[in-house]
Image (cartoon, rainbow, N blue to C red; front, side, top):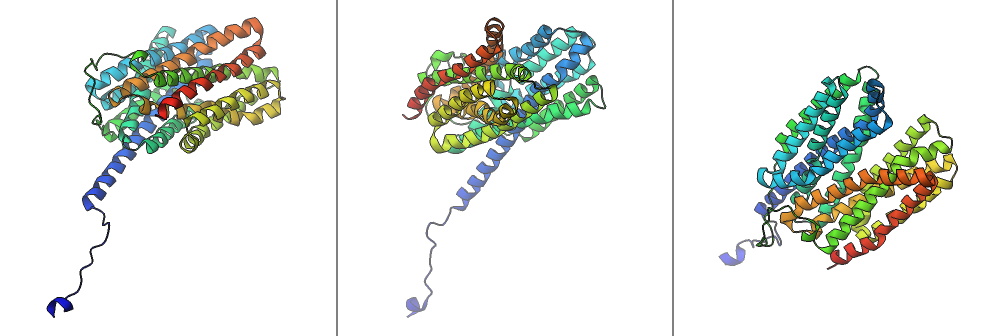
Length: 416
């Protein structure tokens, strides 16, 4: 009787484990922190990098430099940034990604502080070299922090890396615009000094917010010397094809951006119109990072890259032959295609390399792409001098199509 009258206890089916729920919440919090910190670092460093375009004309008037010297100054910054990425990745394995990223951001801030105090061209060039060394830490280490945080979810990892990539475009648009506005009231020395203080404040914030996660490799480390700096031979053919795709894509982007103002000027564009054109292009580029990241998840890397690269080639030809007004209308589309491809490309890096080589793989990838973007204006500029700017830009458009078979090789390995 008692057993019949006692209430029946119902145990809820599939009741979530409180401990597991708490672990998931903690993991999500760590992922958000890593993505926020990496995205902030990307925005600040890319803003510091593109700020040089605003300052070069002022420095040209201040120091009486030629266009060649102005280009050299930009090249020194980019060269130092590209050259020290592999070393930054290597040192991070001993001192931690957080330490190197914070130190690099602080170094970039100090460099801008020094640039704001210098009165000589040599001092300014030295400050730019120092800023480039500081900037070398950002791409390989910040992107690796995001990949580590989302290591257990490859789909969300690509989305997070696309968000991180998009943050860089926000910095490119925001910081140069802010300094351009500040120059209406302040001298360039005062403006650059404030930028240096901003860089140091960012470094302090990164030191506070980053909680570096050292992932446990899912496979055993190989018996080889893992501390040796790897070359491309240490990676699969898929990664080598991905690297080559990134180099060509980056070289195309920089070759196009360098000579686009000359094409528009030949169509009758004024300086203000060229500025508007670049704004339209960068807005499209910022949207492209997110759009192509989404497409990469929906239709795959291969189809996304083929769509964006073919679109790039077609729109370059349209810009060359359309009247000025219609050429301006097409610029957001090519901005989307030019910048969006990179989201899909380097979002595939974690899937093609062992976890213990991830930081170095990102460093190698960025070193190659930045190197390609540094050299392509020299080649296409030489070609333009000898054949004309129209033919040189046509070669830029055709050059990007070399990525199509390379993307197929990458996709082949990803499909395994």
